[in-house]
Amino acid sequence: MNQAIQLLIVLGCITIFLACEQPKSKELPIYGNRDTVERMVDGEKVVDTVYHMLPDFHFIDQDSNSITQETFKDKIYIADFFFTSCPTICPKVKAQMLRVYNKFLDNDELILLSHSIDTKYDTVPVLKKFAEKLQIKTEKWHLVTGVKKDIYAMAKEYFIAAAEDETAPGGYTHSGGLVLVDKKRQVRGVYDGTEPEQVDQLLVDLEKLLKK
Image (spheres, rainbow, N blue to C red):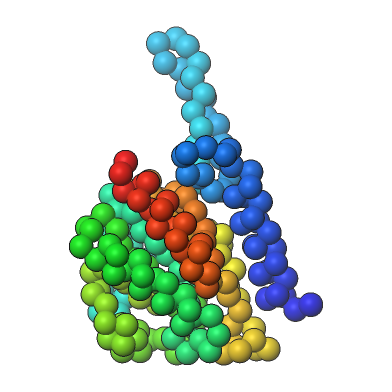
């Protein structure tokens, strides 16, 4: 079993475990590790829970705009990982992302973010052509490229599997996960973007966050 396939299996298991370990309630889970921090308030010890938060990042989108965590300040967003020449799951995932895009096109609280994992081929002009093919607005849906190690590091932060693999179709192995991120930069859900039923649930969960 090669390293890329092992990575997919491990990260897939982590995602399932993280989802299952969350309490079953009307509140959406918060993915990732959590720590506790003690502080004194009026002479009494208070214990706060600190949840996993996505780190700062810097990428470039299809219009050569710098895209950072500040782009998504006070926004909910959905992230995924793809590459424009993907011959397998990417068209299915992008079709589902378009469902989300069209449904919330006029909602300023939501933005979409797609990271290319093929940083050699997917240059800004290539991403621009891809965006034109999708007929999307840049301010609503950012297709980004950047330093390869930074893209792959962010995939792990989102609990998404992505790896170069010469034996895989197109040269890359990755999951089709769609990641729901809240206004606090916390992951609130990971959904299989190749399954319309899971995207149905994403839309339901997204509505919950938008109502807060």
